[in-house]
Length: 119
Image 1: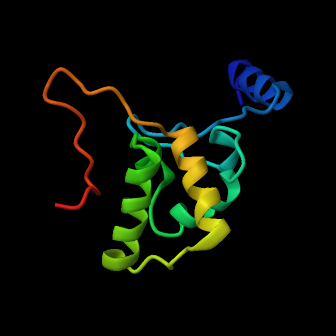
Image 2: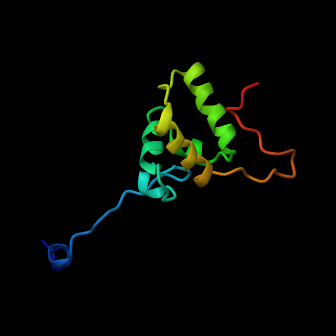
Image 3: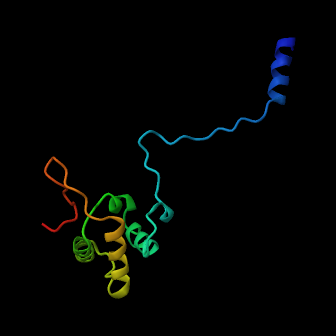
């Protein structure tokens, strides 16, 4: 081997190991965890119920009154086979949704359209 080759081999042997981190592709949405949600009573129960079927981001992008959240839960129970949550557990989840994701102001383009709203 030439001196140049030995110099490269020695430099690589003495260099600290490279740490390569995989980058997420552009546009990749990171999975949410329960800790990412606003801290209010019912956070864990709501996260567990919602993420059993879809990403929580679908919920957090909504903004509805407690009454609309209640209608949405009923719709999902009747049309999407979500477990029928009633009593104190339903109240806790509805309180969380209404507090953490209240109604959003309508946009200038005609207002917010809820994809879960009954037609």
